Image (cartoon, rainbow, N blue to C red; front, side):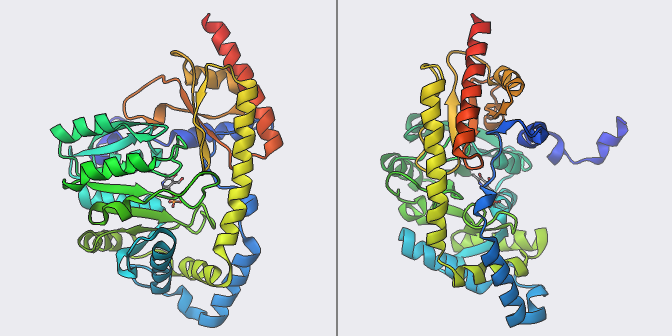
Length: 399
Ligand SMILES: Cc1ncc(COP(=O)(O)O)c(C=O)c1O
């Protein structure tokens, strides 16, 4: 078997498997309450509306919806996305600046492909999105993690890095981050913009959750603050359905040209059929009303989780208080290991994602991610009570 290793590229050798997918195997037991998933709530998928949109486009366009199409994506859908940015976020972009991708995950891969050479440094928020770590790892960068806390990025650490390195990219999820649920403050965004503005570092603003704000005020997009150096990623996965795999990259023209070449080389184009369905759905329905429904459900579920944490967790456990999105982040006291907590919690029939895979080089951390979008309020209370019990057990074992 040893010689078989030679058939694989160096590129794939050290890329980690998705830890979360491994963990999710445990959830087959129906009695387990899972805060480990990262999925949008399936009860909120607009199934009937999608059915109607699908029938309509087939009746209207017939065979043409099944034909090959342009690499940039469906022109009307790109126009819709650009107009929505102009209207909702006051970001001045045109449809030419939008490339439709197979989920925003593909946007991350394409950016790695066109921008990262072996060993080049890129900044990544920490804890950071596992899918970004995985996508960029393929291109062998040197990761420079910058810690994120309640207000956003650690500005001093960022300054320090920028004074000694010339990173190609900086990756952030400034709205309700996966995994931490943190949203960067207005001040933090301006400070970051000021530091990066004078450099050649491109900022990747990955924003699949931005529309899901259920508390607090909207914050200014980096694409608004310094458009020339910001590449904004978006997605319909969390506001319509993830199964169509439709996302986009919004980038300056010179970056867009290279992205289109990489897109052609990767998969020619994203499914024209699913792009047409999404466009028809958007035309025939009020997406803001639909998003409002999602926000109401997630807002209540998040509140139920926070309330139960206050009730059932020991006082010295810290946690974030998200204003949107699908996750919150917990820090156990001292050096308690969340991996050890996982073993206890499984026995009590509740699971979560231990923090380790969201860091570049840390093991046995005391952090964990909880998802609140997929579990109803009553079940959240039971699950958090079980988890609180497991935390106390772990504290007692340590004593
Ligand atoms: C921060 C972040 N970026 C990107 C993605 C990928 O989303 P999609 O490819 O479905 O658009 C996810 C999915 O969970 C995510 O959490």
